[in-house]
Amino acid sequence: NFEELPSAKGHMALSSTFSCFGNQWRIKLHPGGYSESLTGMVAVFLERCSGDRKLAIKYSIGFNGDEERMIRLGKSIFDGSVSWGWANFYSRSEIIGDDEEGGFLENGALTLYVGIQLDEFIPKNPASSFMLKLFNDENSADIVFEICEQHKSDSESDRKRAKTSTEKLYHAHRFILQHYSAELSALCATSDGMTPIIITDVKPEVFRHLLYYIYGGEINDDDFAVHEKDFINAADKYGVTNLKLEAEVWCVNN
Image (cartoon, rainbow, N blue to C red; front, side, top):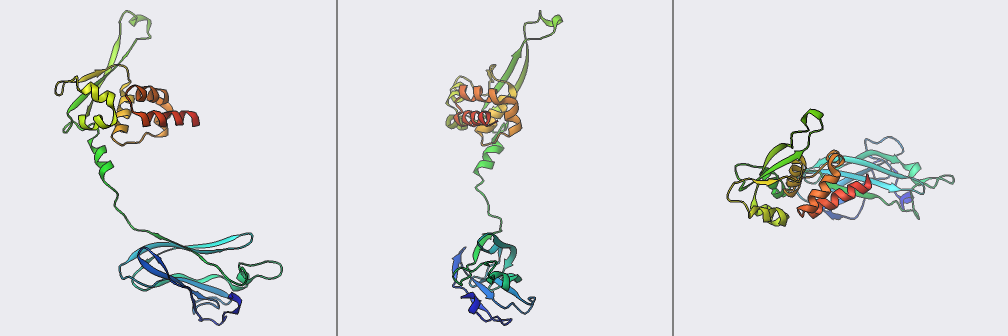
């Protein structure tokens, strides 16, 4: 019962220990405050009870009331058995409440909610970034696509010209295409060495995004807004199913 705990400054009550990140932790509660607390304030600290390696921790301690929730956030280095928290966590009288305001006790007990998050750099699997580094890498590529966008001129004086074209070269890897696009992989079988495979039914920029997606890249909203229909058509033609679905969902949502 929280109200029955001694309210003299410096008195301490300990929670049971709990485990997180391979360490033992507990809450140190000073119902009447700590030596540095203001009069009438409750002090609360999170204590690390085991381990000696430095841990950068983000933590939260709070409690729920009938109509509100109180929470405090902290960030500290826990080095060995050390505690961090607040000397002026909350007013004792407000925790207990009165006839008009119920406070934060439930059947006399104060329940504290504790959150602990490791605030350290954790290396990610480098496979995805390695794939992206191979995108359009001329030195390691064993296949080349030549994208020729053909279009008719709109000017009156140029109508006698049949067509103009914009050509772009994109380098790729047969092994990767075999796993992500059966259609592009089949085109690779028609090429002898690094002889460019000519594609005329996709805009160069759209094909670049298609290839970038195959190599693990993401397409942002601005590019979807400009090329949404082209992405759907190109992904459908060349069997990049996930890109087609993503573009269709974007189209519906926007």
